[in-house]
Length: 154
Image (cartoon, rainbow, N blue to C red; front, side, top):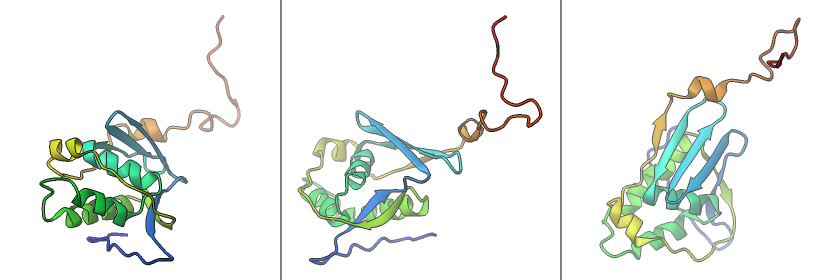
C-alpha cells in the first residue's frame, strides 16, 4: 500500500485518526525520541523531535486535522506544513505502523521548540541492522526431538 498524499477529511460525525497497528508494532518513547519495531519484518524505526511528538499525538487518538491546526499555530511554520504532514502520515500508513480509525477530537498543543529545532521536518528513519535478532524466536525454534534445553549449571 503506497500513498503519496494522505488527505485530511473531517465532518461532524467522523474525525479521521490513526491508531497503532498493535498486531505487529511495538513502540516506546523516551524524552523526544520514539522507537518503533515491526515484529513481522524485524525492521525498526527511529523517530526524533517533532516527528515523535506528532507520532505520539496520533498514537493518543488525536485527529490528523487537529495536529495540522496545532502545527499551523506555531510561529514561522513553513507554508508547506500540510504537505509535510501528509507525507509523514502516508509513510506511517505505508509501513503499516498506523491504521486509520475514527474517534473524538481533543485540544492539541505542539511544542514549538521541537518544531523549530527540527526545521519543521517530519522524518521517520528505517533500520534493518537488528532484523535477525528481532525476528529470532529461541523459545519456539527448538529441536523437536530434544525439546527445550536451557543451559544448565553443573
